[in-house]
Image (tube, rainbow, N blue to C red; front, side, top):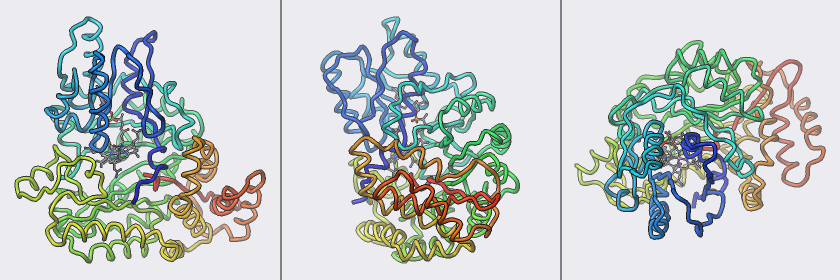
Amino acid sequence: MFWRPIKYSLFPPLGLATLAAHLDPDDQVTLCDEHVETLDLDDRPDLVALEVYITNAYRAYAIADLYRSRGVHVALGGLHVTALPEEARRHADTIFLGPGDDTWPAFLADFRAGRPAPAYRSTVRTLVGQPPPRRDLIKRHLYLVPNSLVVSRGCPHRCSYCYKDGFYRGGKSFYTRAVDEALAEIESLPGRHPYFLDDHLLGSPRFAAALFAGMRGMGRVWQAAATVASVLRPELLEAAVEAGLRSLFVGFETLTEDNLSEQNKSHNLGRDYRLAVRRLHDLGVMVNASFVYGMDGDDATVFDRTVEWAVREGIETATFHILTPYPGTALHARLAAQGRLLSDDWDRYDTRHTVFRPARMSAEALESGYRQSYREFYRWRSIARAAWTHAAWPARLRHLAYAGMWKKAEPLWDLLVRAKRVSSMGPWLERVLGPGAARRKRGQATFSESASQAAELWSGKSGADMAYSALIAAWTAKPGSSDVSGGTRGLL
Ligand code: B12
């Protein structure tokens, strides 16, 4: 029901582009992403490397089996392989546990020497001196946000449901690039819109502060993810905004303190969520709030309470998830020990299905409450109510346009995905995000000023494009010197 083609056309396969950077310049390499293109499976390369997430595991195994039947050496790596090496091993000549930045180059040397090992486990955890991803291999036109990047790996926290502890076992689980190398990569990206996929971009305040200082004046507008605690921290958020932050994914996850303790999300405990949202909005940063349903403290009232809170706080976009015990996590171990796992069909581990027995409601009630939350949050009535919590017209219009564009324009997105024209929205998106400037001044733009900007953007556009341009331009209007800008982190 919530399969959305546009979601899979957002970001290119950054992990594989990262690994490709270790190949020799004269190696022939093709980077394919079945989310957005049809694979040519008739070839017979020397080596096939597949990235395995939980929900693409069966497909990855089928492709692996096919190539192995032709005698091609198949390498499997990524989160799911690390979590379940014995399962993956049955479909691979070589498996990789943990990040591939140290093991992949070692494997390539062994492979060239004709003695590849059956398994490699990452132990050396550093990004310093790593080559930047091979972006030349990315088919940029297939993605709405081709400039995704990571400047760190992992996270300083240890939430029970997170993939992190299992994946980084045996070494550091949070580390960053060298600041100058990260800045050089950002500088090299075309366009104005980088998107940080880091689990927690503000996780190291020292690194983040240096990064933001270096990004000031680059004229970038960007999006990222961070915690409530880091948003509440004085100064760092301001520095991020000065450097071009326009929308932030924030892991609120639950409004119940017992749930936070249960999931070891102690850094959210006792935090003032409302203040965090207010700080972001006052700085002109859109909020994409993440919520997880089905923790042991949740009963059937959780859905309405959560949606009502999010709407009341004027949150622009929200992603709701059903708690999902990924293999390799502390959560999975606990639910398995309690005999509460209902399924090991990995296709259902997509955060849209209930794969365990919830404590205080039925599995069906959890799924239907989850679906109801999406419907309720993205009703026009809710969108309008949330938008009207902002004091100024531009912020309201921005909110309407942003949420509307993302959740109410499905036919337009589908059309663009099918026509392989998603990237045509890129420049438009950059414009939506606004100028790469500093703090928004509240209440300076009037509706009519915004609307006249809309008219300007209309020129040369047609149909649905025009309708959305009108809304979007209204929100990106630049009255006097004030800068009102939006974001798309809601895209994840
Ligand atoms: C971007 C992203 C997406 C994009 C994917 C775009 C793409 N084409 O790759 C989109 C939006 C489509 C997406 C969708 C989903 N995602 Co997602 N996504 C991410 C995110 C935020 C970043 C991934 C990334 O690019 N990392 C940066 C690169 C550099 O790292 P990497 O990919 O991990 O690659 C490194 C290693 O894994 C390893 N490696 C990987 N593959 C291989 C292969 C070989 C041969 C070797 C040697 C090494 C190796 O080496 C690489 C370099 O170190 C992660 C969170 C995270 N931190 O991982 C979640 C994450 C991967 N997603 C997750 C999930 C659950 C989903 C969804 C199922 C559901 C949902 N609600 O979003 C869907 C389905 C995806 C699918 N088809 O299976 C989970 C996966 C859990 C799991 N155990 O598998 C994660 C971890 C988030 C979470 N909830 O914790 N996602």
